[in-house]
Amino acid sequence: MESFIIEGGHPLKGTITPQGAKNEALEVICASILTSEPVRIQNIPDILDVNNLIQLLVDIGMKVTRNTRHDYTFQADHLNLDYLGSQEFVNKCSKLRGSVLLIGPLLSRFGKATIAKPGGDKIGRRRLDTHFQGFKALGARFVYDENRSTFEIQAKKLKGTYMLLGEASVTGTANIIMSAVLAEGTTTIYNAACEPYIQQLCHLLNAMGANISGIASNLITVVGVKVLHGAKHEILPDMIEIGSFIGMAAMVGEGVRIKNVSLQNLGIIPDTFRRIGVKINVDGNDLVIPQQKHYAVDTFLDGTILTLSDAPWPGLTPDLLSVLLVVATQARGTVLIHQKMFESRLFFVDKLIDMGAQIILCDPHRAVVVGHDRKRQLRAGRMTSPDIRAGIALLIAAMNAKGTSRIDNIEQIDRGYQNIEQRLNHIGAKITRVTE
Ligand SMILES: CC(=O)N[C@H]1[C@@H](OP(=O)(O)OP(=O)(O)OC[C@H]2O[C@@H](n3ccc(=O)[nH]c3=O)[C@H](O)[C@@H]2O)O[C@H](CO)[C@@H](O)[C@@H]1O
Ligand SMILES: C=C(OP(=O)(O)O)C(=O)O
Image 1 (tube, rainbow, N blue to C red):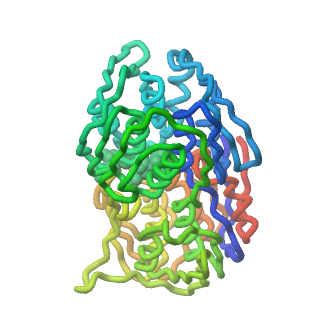
Image 2: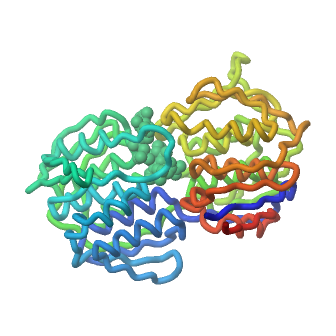
C-alpha cells in the first residue's frame, strides 16, 4: 500500500497542464468495441482506472497499440467473448466503475453481455437501474446467474424506442446510446445526461458513422445504422482535475496558470469557485489563479448563506464538492455544501475537523463550513483517502497545513490523477510517495 507524506506550507507557483478526462476516456475507449476497424484515441490519461479498463479490453481480445504515452489505437476485430464467462472477468470489473460501460457496446454489436458488479468509489448507493431500464426498453432480456452474481444479458436484435429515463445517469446514458447506435429504428432518450463526457462520446460515434442528434441536450435521438467504422478522437482536458487545480491554487497558490482548459466545456465550474471568492482570470484557453491573501464567500442576493449543491449537467458536478468544501475552510464567510446525489461522500470532513477546520456535518448530505479567513492554519494530520475526490481534497488540506501530514490509501487518488505528486512538486509542493 502506498502513502503520501506531505510537508505543508510550500506554495504552488507556475504552470500546470490538465490530463485528459478520466470519465470521457472510459466511455470513448469502450466505444471502440462497436467496430472491427481501428479507432484512434488521443489524450488518454495514464491513470489507474483507465489502465485497468484497457487491460480488461486486452483480456477480451482487443488489439491495443500504444502509439505514444497518451495516444492509442484500439481494434476489436477478434474479441473472445468466452472471457466474459470467467471469474477473472467478474473480479476485474469490481475494480472500476468504468467496467459497466462494456455492456452497451457488447450488447449492441454481439447481442450479449455480462453485467458484473462494477467497482468505483464507495460514495453511497450506486444503482444501475437506469442502465437496465434502457437495455430492457431496447428489447434485451436478463438472466441472473446466482453462482457468479452476474446478469447475463441477451438480445437477438435491439429495436429503437422512446424512453424517459428515471434519472439522468451519466454512465447509464452512455450505455444506452452505445446500445442504440446499431439498433433497428430510432431511439429517443429523454432525461438523458449531457455532460461533456456524453457529448464527446456522441461526437466520436457520429465520426464512426452513427446518427445521433440532440447532443448537449437532455433529449437525444439515435437513428440506428447497420455498421460503424473506424475514427479518430481527442479527449477533452479533465474538468474535475482543472477544478481541483483551481482549488489548490486558491488555497496554497502564489500565482498558478492552468493550461489549455477548454473553457467552453467547463460549464458552471469557474463561476462556482468565484462564488466562494476565488479570483480566476481567463487568458486565451488558460486560467490564471492569482495569489489571494483572502477570499470571501458570496451570499445569496437576499443576504442569506450561500448553498453549493450538485445537479445533473449543466448543474454543478458532484465530483467537485469535496474540493470546494476544503477551499471554503480558509475563506472568509460561511457556505452550506449540499451533496444531493451521494450519501457517503462527506464523511471525510471528520479528518478536516481534526486538522482544525470549522465544519458542522449536519447529516450525510450537508455540511456547513465556517471559513477561517486564513487567521488559523490547518494542522497536519494522518489520514486515509476514502474516495478519489475526498483524497484530493485531503491532499489540498495537507499542502495548506502546518507540519507534515500523511495520506494512506492513495490508490484512490491514483485512480484519477496522473503522477499527481510529480506534477505538483514541479510547481512547488513537497510530496513524497512511500510504500509500506
Ligand atoms: C465513470 C463515471 O463517469 N463516473 C461519474 C458518473 O458516475 P455514474 O454514471 O455511476 O453516476 P450516475 O450518474 O448514474 O448517478 C450518480 C448518483 O446520483 C444519483 N442521481 C443521478 C442522477 C440524478 O439526476 N439524480 C441523482 O440523484 C444516482 O441515483 C446515483 O446515486 O457520474 C457521477 C455523477 O455525476 C460522477 O460522480 C462519477 O464521477
Ligand atoms: C466518483 C468518481 O469516479 P467513479 O465513478 O469512477 O467511482 C469520480 O470520478 O469522482
